[in-house]
Picture 1 (cartoon, rainbow, N blue to C red):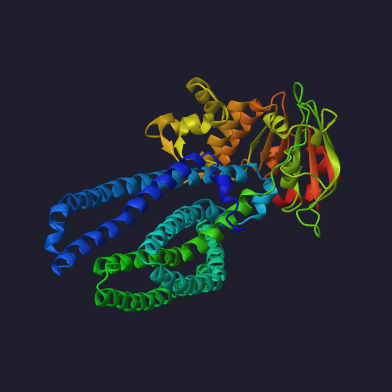
Picture 2 (spheres, one colour):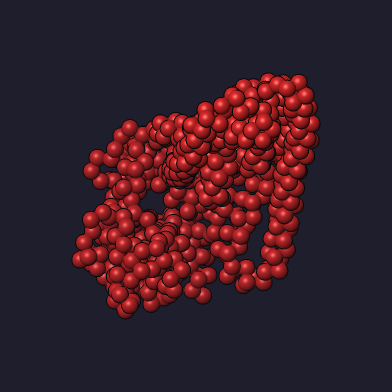
Length: 588
């Protein structure tokens, strides 16, 4: 119950519908349980006449005709009404279940979107997907349906007890005293199995994450010739998953047989005791507990024990779903990207300043160590240096995906942490090394960041990005449906991303290895388009190809997270320092 406490929050907005559905479940159960009682009365009626208990002089046949018709009429009414009420309950249960899991998925996805980038970076993407898809399905099939079965079972038990006490209180006590044994066995077995279901859910997420990583990097795996090693790693994780799943399945399979065996023994005892009551009443010539009553009572005893059987059947699903709900709750409670900024950028970004920045993704390793830089409006800044020197990390700090541990970033002489993050990001456009193409048309991909963009604006942006040529050759031009796996080359995908930036025309442009995956001819065309885009705009360019940044106003050379040289291209070459070595290493 502790694990499922938050379920009540997810049910907010559906509580009236839940209440109505529970009423229909109650009505359906009442109709269902009235049938054995009515059937027992009919059996007693025919049995009494077969044994001549009703004497001819009593005129029973004359008086019982309307009673017989009335009982048959009630029996039919209960059958029809029970079926209708049960259908309404099943419909509302399914409707509420799908509504709740849709809400859970929306809020969980929102939690992912609202989480800081650092939280998403350090999380297993496969496990996050597992929680969003599979774990939520487990909650729907296990908890929501399971709790509906529990309620239905409780109602059945209560009403059944009422009927049994009305018919024979002694037999009712026998049933009540013996049946909880089934619950005790089910409880201890389910509690023991809980750890296996947790292990199964955890290993399933681990397996999904591994497969996602392997498929994403399948080209690199084949290039490095490590397919066999990856297969062995997968086999190891898969064996772990098989083992945990086997234990969970075997544990679940022990619940049902054990409870059914106990229920069968209870049923046998009831037959013996009930038969003794019938013999006693017949021997004494009394009318109090007849054959029809025993038939009805055995039906009620089965109905009384059946909920426990059903509970034992769903206990494994509920336990598994509770573990899934716990994982969902943890993901939904991920830290939010708290924005304490209260100011907005007034006008344009006139200056961007970093003052003695110190930052590390882990406490034991600094990526940025004492970085300071003053960027003025319209300057073209280039960040160069070996891999791992902190170039991309600086971009993350400027965009406030991360905040420095020491030092500060200022925008227009205002402390960046006092400015609303969305306000900062709305003034900055980025093109990254990794392309981002979503499923949709070419037009939609380019116009994604600008609502209401016209076809003319999109075409113009594509022309500036030198992308209109290959787009026009596509089967439906700008209406061609594309995706990340639609057959476009890396360069063509990058051109679409650049066209997207062209359309937005931000005042600050960040190019993080934007041309690294493009051929020389396309790169030349892009450089021409960038010249037009960057006119009068501030730009920060991260590049390995030093030929693309020779015209920069300021080249900042980084090593181990600190600036070791800075200046324009010519002055840095004259120094014959680290930049000189990097440049000559590429062209000699």
